[in-house]
Amino acid sequence: MSTSEASPMEPSKAKAESDTLEELVGLLKSLAPKHPLVAVALKSLATATCSTSTLTAVASHLPIATQLLQMLNLDDETPINLSNQQCLLQIIINYSSADRWSEAVFQLTREKMCCLLVHHSDKALLKNYALLDKVFAVLSNLTRKQLDALAVYRPIPEEDLRKFIAMFDSANCDPTKPQLQFFPSLLVNLSALSEFRRLVMDKQRLVLQRLLPFMDMKFSLAVRGAVMRLVRNCVFDPDDHQWLLGPDVSLLAHLLLPLAGPEDFDEEENHKLPIDLQYLPAEKQREPDADLRITLLEALLQLCCTEYGRSFLRDNGAYYILRELHEWEKNAAARIACENVVDPLISDEPDQAHLKDLKQIDIPQDLARKFEDMKRQLAEDS
Image 1 (cartoon, rainbow, N blue to C red):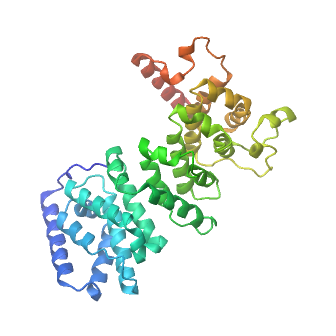
Image 2 (cartoon, rainbow, N blue to C red):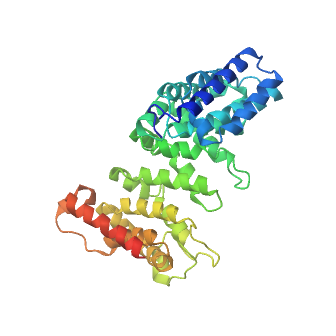
Image 3 (cartoon, rainbow, N blue to C red):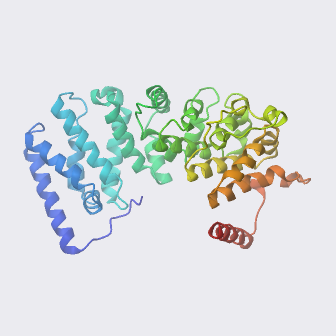
């Protein structure tokens, strides 16, 4: 998402939409908050902002954004206000998904949403998970760039973020009644920040451990995909690998289980595998989404960057799961991602100390481009 000034559309159309929005601002200002016409206007705008042209127009129009944000009242629990607040938040979700913004609208929306989250415990309607999740959805839209994520992260107390993670965990004990489904997407965006990754991987608290079970297929594609991407971002720092792979987190089992199928392994191979991957049932299915399988493989590849990680994966039978996955895999990109993980596992360890950490090896740019071209060609040929 870009926060630069929105690009001009056809002048006559832009003028007409701007005039319409100005009229709507005047109408909303003239009416009492619970006037029936307010509900009609908000429902109409919620529907209209499902279209790209209208949501882009709203995202570029400071007066209408200001009016909508001023109308947010999450203290009043009366049914008519609840309905209006649902519409308001949906409109903000819609326009916050625009590809291009007015910078002023972006900043105002971000400040208002952060303020709501900081003071969530004082807002009666934010005890309603459906409305709270709409706030998370807006913030997810607002944090697609790293600098924007930082601007959202800093005002929110870390203890509140930990509480939200615990809240998400307890609210989704029953996968058939999902709640706070946009919250993991916000976490993924925040995980681009080293400060947030430190919070998630706090060794004194069970933060990451609360999220790992949501990689299971019984949860929605959006939720498990977001958690998988969050985990992938958390393994980029080799200093955390021993803790992540150790008994406090047992990350390897969580990464391999979605990649495992119903194959039978011999006694020796089974004995090597983490306990959760031994003697899987005949109905065991792999993660059906190829992009998510690639995400898991990318996380495993990061763990292979150090000698410790490679040794741990070998000693815990990761190769056996990857061998069967490669045999089963039909997606060309996923097969290449699988091969990328297998290669360092089956290769001899380098003798030179400076070659043991793969992240420290400098690859000439011309060779890097050639490797990327070869991967692309392989994917196309497959």
